[in-house]
Length: 117
Length: 111
Image 1 (cartoon, helix red, strand yellow):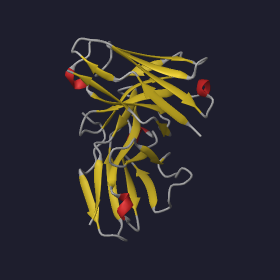
Image 2 (cartoon, helix red, strand yellow; image 1 turned 30 degrees about the vertical axis):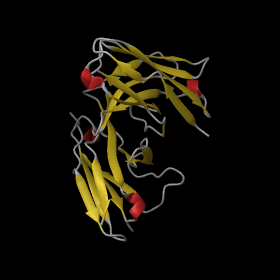
Image 3 (cartoon, chains in turn brown, purple; image 1 turned 180 degrees about the horizontal axis):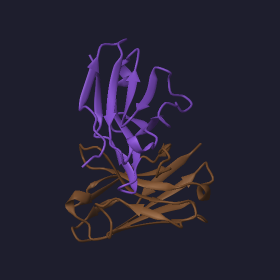
Protein backbone atom coordinates (compact mmCIF):
# COMPACT_ATOMS: atom_id res chain seq x y z
CA UNK A 1 0.00 0.00 0.00
CA UNK A 2 1.37 3.37 -1.03
CA UNK A 3 1.67 5.83 1.83
CA UNK A 4 2.90 9.42 1.87
CA UNK A 5 3.20 11.22 5.17
CA UNK A 6 4.02 14.93 5.39
CA UNK A 7 5.50 16.72 8.38
CA UNK A 8 7.12 20.02 9.25
CA UNK A 9 4.18 22.37 8.90
CA UNK A 10 3.01 24.96 11.39
CA UNK A 11 2.90 28.67 12.11
CA UNK A 12 5.71 30.83 10.77
CA UNK A 13 6.16 34.59 10.62
CA UNK A 14 6.31 36.46 7.31
CA UNK A 15 9.84 36.39 5.97
CA UNK A 16 10.59 33.15 7.80
CA UNK A 17 11.54 29.70 6.55
CA UNK A 18 10.17 26.20 6.82
CA UNK A 19 11.16 22.75 5.61
CA UNK A 20 8.48 20.23 4.80
CA UNK A 21 9.22 16.52 4.67
CA UNK A 22 7.34 13.62 3.10
CA UNK A 23 8.18 10.02 3.93
CA UNK A 24 7.11 7.54 1.26
CA UNK A 25 6.46 3.81 1.46
CA UNK A 26 4.84 1.07 -0.57
CA UNK A 27 6.60 1.75 -3.88
CA UNK A 28 10.11 2.15 -5.31
CA UNK A 29 10.66 5.78 -4.37
CA UNK A 30 13.80 6.40 -6.44
CA UNK A 31 12.03 5.38 -9.67
CA UNK A 32 9.34 8.04 -9.41
CA UNK A 33 9.03 11.77 -9.87
CA UNK A 34 7.56 13.47 -6.82
CA UNK A 35 5.73 16.76 -6.44
CA UNK A 36 4.35 19.26 -3.98
CA UNK A 37 0.86 20.67 -4.50
CA UNK A 38 -0.79 23.23 -2.23
CA UNK A 39 -4.29 24.46 -1.50
CA UNK A 40 -4.97 27.79 0.16
CA UNK A 41 -7.97 27.86 2.53
CA UNK A 42 -11.17 27.64 0.52
CA UNK A 43 -9.28 27.74 -2.79
CA UNK A 44 -8.31 25.33 -5.55
CA UNK A 45 -5.24 23.20 -6.10
CA UNK A 46 -1.94 24.79 -7.11
CA UNK A 47 1.08 22.81 -8.29
CA UNK A 48 4.23 24.00 -6.51
CA UNK A 49 7.23 21.93 -7.57
CA UNK A 50 8.40 18.62 -9.06
CA UNK A 51 11.64 16.65 -8.87
CA UNK A 52 12.74 13.72 -11.01
CA UNK A 53 13.37 10.27 -9.61
CA UNK A 54 17.12 10.61 -9.33
CA UNK A 55 16.82 14.26 -8.34
CA UNK A 56 18.61 15.52 -11.40
CA UNK A 57 15.96 17.96 -12.50
CA UNK A 58 13.31 20.08 -10.85
CA UNK A 59 10.75 22.71 -11.78
CA UNK A 60 8.89 25.34 -9.82
CA UNK A 61 5.72 27.35 -10.14
CA UNK A 62 6.36 31.04 -10.75
CA UNK A 63 4.74 31.84 -7.40
CA UNK A 64 7.56 30.10 -5.47
CA UNK A 65 10.48 30.28 -7.90
CA UNK A 66 13.55 31.66 -6.14
CA UNK A 67 12.05 31.05 -2.70
CA UNK A 68 11.57 27.28 -2.70
CA UNK A 69 13.95 24.36 -3.10
CA UNK A 70 12.72 20.82 -3.66
CA UNK A 71 15.03 17.91 -2.87
CA UNK A 72 14.95 14.22 -2.08
CA UNK A 73 16.94 11.60 -0.24
CA UNK A 74 16.37 8.30 -2.00
CA UNK A 75 18.23 6.44 0.75
CA UNK A 76 15.54 7.57 3.17
CA UNK A 77 12.57 7.53 0.77
CA UNK A 78 11.97 11.14 1.73
CA UNK A 79 10.96 14.23 -0.22
CA UNK A 80 11.61 17.77 1.03
CA UNK A 81 10.45 21.29 0.31
CA UNK A 82 12.46 24.17 1.75
CA UNK A 83 10.42 27.38 1.68
CA UNK A 84 12.13 30.72 2.34
CA UNK A 85 10.96 34.34 2.55
CA UNK A 86 7.47 33.09 3.33
CA UNK A 87 4.50 35.37 2.63
CA UNK A 88 0.89 35.40 3.70
CA UNK A 89 -0.22 33.97 0.38
CA UNK A 90 1.92 30.89 1.05
CA UNK A 91 -0.61 29.90 3.73
CA UNK A 92 -2.03 26.59 2.54
CA UNK A 93 -2.29 22.88 3.04
CA UNK A 94 0.74 21.37 1.32
CA UNK A 95 0.35 17.93 -0.23
CA UNK A 96 3.11 15.57 -1.21
CA UNK A 97 2.14 13.66 -4.35
CA UNK A 98 3.64 10.83 -6.37
CA UNK A 99 4.01 11.79 -10.01
CA UNK A 100 4.27 15.07 -11.84
CA UNK A 101 5.06 16.82 -15.11
CA UNK A 102 2.88 15.04 -17.71
CA UNK A 103 2.26 12.09 -15.37
CA UNK A 104 -0.77 12.03 -13.08
CA UNK A 105 -0.53 12.52 -9.34
CA UNK A 106 -1.63 9.00 -8.54
CA UNK A 107 -1.13 9.06 -4.78
CA UNK A 108 -1.36 11.91 -2.30
CA UNK A 109 -0.41 12.46 1.31
CA UNK A 110 -2.96 13.67 3.84
CA UNK A 111 -1.55 17.21 3.67
CA UNK A 112 0.15 19.49 6.17
CA UNK A 113 -0.96 23.02 7.07
CA UNK A 114 1.46 25.92 6.77
CA UNK A 115 0.24 29.22 8.22
CA UNK A 116 2.21 32.39 7.58
CA UNK A 117 1.16 35.08 10.03
CA UNK B 1 -4.41 32.12 -11.59
CA UNK B 2 -5.49 28.76 -13.02
CA UNK B 3 -4.68 28.03 -16.63
CA UNK B 4 -7.49 25.50 -17.10
CA UNK B 5 -11.09 26.75 -16.82
CA UNK B 6 -13.93 24.76 -15.28
CA UNK B 7 -17.50 25.74 -14.37
CA UNK B 8 -17.71 26.67 -10.66
CA UNK B 9 -20.58 24.30 -10.01
CA UNK B 10 -22.83 21.68 -11.53
CA UNK B 11 -25.76 19.86 -9.98
CA UNK B 12 -28.09 17.00 -10.69
CA UNK B 13 -30.62 14.69 -9.11
CA UNK B 14 -29.65 11.19 -8.03
CA UNK B 15 -29.39 8.93 -11.05
CA UNK B 16 -28.88 11.75 -13.52
CA UNK B 17 -25.78 12.48 -15.60
CA UNK B 18 -23.62 15.57 -15.17
CA UNK B 19 -20.70 16.75 -17.23
CA UNK B 20 -17.80 18.98 -16.21
CA UNK B 21 -15.80 20.80 -18.87
CA UNK B 22 -12.13 21.75 -18.70
CA UNK B 23 -10.93 24.34 -21.22
CA UNK B 24 -7.26 24.89 -21.87
CA UNK B 25 -5.09 26.23 -24.68
CA UNK B 26 -2.52 25.31 -27.29
CA UNK B 27 0.28 25.10 -24.71
CA UNK B 28 -1.40 22.45 -22.55
CA UNK B 29 -4.38 20.33 -23.59
CA UNK B 30 -4.17 21.48 -27.21
CA UNK B 31 -0.48 20.54 -27.33
CA UNK B 32 -1.41 16.91 -26.80
CA UNK B 33 -0.64 16.60 -23.09
CA UNK B 34 -2.88 14.21 -21.20
CA UNK B 35 -5.66 15.41 -18.93
CA UNK B 36 -6.16 13.86 -15.50
CA UNK B 37 -9.10 14.32 -13.14
CA UNK B 38 -9.23 14.35 -9.35
CA UNK B 39 -12.06 14.08 -6.82
CA UNK B 40 -11.71 15.88 -3.51
CA UNK B 41 -14.24 14.98 -0.85
CA UNK B 42 -14.75 17.59 1.91
CA UNK B 43 -11.79 17.73 4.29
CA UNK B 44 -9.75 15.11 2.48
CA UNK B 45 -6.83 14.94 0.05
CA UNK B 46 -7.54 14.77 -3.68
CA UNK B 47 -7.86 11.33 -5.24
CA UNK B 48 -7.00 10.39 -8.81
CA UNK B 49 -10.23 9.68 -10.68
CA UNK B 50 -9.25 9.59 -14.37
CA UNK B 51 -5.76 9.47 -15.89
CA UNK B 52 -4.57 9.74 -19.46
CA UNK B 53 -7.79 11.46 -20.59
CA UNK B 54 -10.10 8.48 -20.21
CA UNK B 55 -8.60 5.76 -18.02
CA UNK B 56 -9.91 4.80 -14.61
CA UNK B 57 -7.59 3.62 -11.82
CA UNK B 58 -8.52 0.37 -10.16
CA UNK B 59 -11.47 0.84 -7.83
CA UNK B 60 -13.01 3.85 -9.57
CA UNK B 61 -16.60 3.05 -10.65
CA UNK B 62 -17.33 3.02 -14.37
CA UNK B 63 -19.93 5.75 -13.74
CA UNK B 64 -16.99 8.12 -14.15
CA UNK B 65 -15.69 8.68 -17.67
CA UNK B 66 -13.37 11.16 -19.33
CA UNK B 67 -12.76 12.45 -22.82
CA UNK B 68 -10.59 14.99 -24.60
CA UNK B 69 -10.93 16.90 -27.85
CA UNK B 70 -8.86 19.78 -29.13
CA UNK B 71 -8.10 22.22 -26.33
CA UNK B 72 -10.78 20.85 -23.99
CA UNK B 73 -11.60 17.82 -21.91
CA UNK B 74 -14.64 16.68 -19.98
CA UNK B 75 -15.58 14.46 -17.08
CA UNK B 76 -18.96 12.76 -17.05
CA UNK B 77 -20.63 11.27 -14.00
CA UNK B 78 -23.57 9.05 -14.86
CA UNK B 79 -26.00 7.56 -12.36
CA UNK B 80 -25.20 10.38 -9.93
CA UNK B 81 -25.02 9.30 -6.28
CA UNK B 82 -25.02 11.31 -3.07
CA UNK B 83 -21.45 10.23 -2.34
CA UNK B 84 -20.35 11.96 -5.55
CA UNK B 85 -20.79 15.34 -3.88
CA UNK B 86 -17.27 16.73 -4.01
CA UNK B 87 -14.93 19.12 -5.76
CA UNK B 88 -13.48 17.96 -9.06
CA UNK B 89 -10.29 19.23 -10.70
CA UNK B 90 -8.77 18.65 -14.10
CA UNK B 91 -4.99 18.77 -14.53
CA UNK B 92 -2.53 18.76 -17.41
CA UNK B 93 0.98 19.91 -18.27
CA UNK B 94 1.78 23.29 -19.76
CA UNK B 95 4.84 23.61 -21.99
CA UNK B 96 4.97 27.40 -21.70
CA UNK B 97 5.00 27.27 -17.91
CA UNK B 98 7.12 24.09 -17.76
CA UNK B 99 4.86 22.75 -15.07
CA UNK B 100 1.64 21.06 -14.15
CA UNK B 101 -1.54 23.10 -14.22
CA UNK B 102 -4.86 22.53 -12.49
CA UNK B 103 -8.34 23.57 -13.42
CA UNK B 104 -10.29 26.09 -11.37
CA UNK B 105 -12.33 23.32 -9.78
CA UNK B 106 -16.01 22.36 -9.97
CA UNK B 107 -18.30 21.65 -7.05
CA UNK B 108 -20.79 18.89 -7.76
CA UNK B 109 -24.03 19.02 -5.80
CA UNK B 110 -26.53 16.17 -5.70
CA UNK B 111 -30.00 17.65 -5.38
